Length: 140
Ligand SMILES: [Cu+2]
Image 1 (cartoon, rainbow, N blue to C red):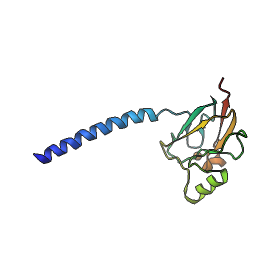
Image 2: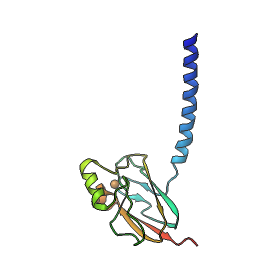
Image 3: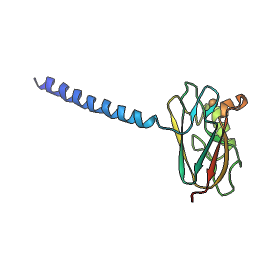
Image 4: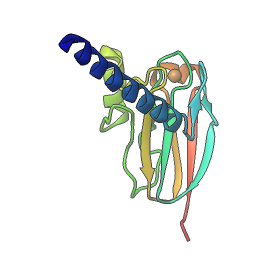
């Protein structure tokens, strides 16, 4: 009897956890840029300053979101999945152990505070033309 009670408690806890998962799943489906087998969708995105952009790997292939070095406004900073400090560092990390990879369903976020154009790419699929652009307009 004691054991049965214990199992029932676990069952109830599991039900709660699953419900929480479903809620999280719905929220996680919201993103700004998705990914196909070899492209960002959309390739170009325009937002206002202060916007946090969310990328989501909506494909089954591993990708990265990696800024092109210096292809962003002077006052802005480098950004990359894996939080690397530079394009070279991100590329080296990918070469060694797929550093910075976004697997299916993974997301990456970056807040754009400085107006201007930001060009980025996917390290393993640059040769396939997997590049993207975020344009940030002044927030007035
Ligand atoms: Cu890719």
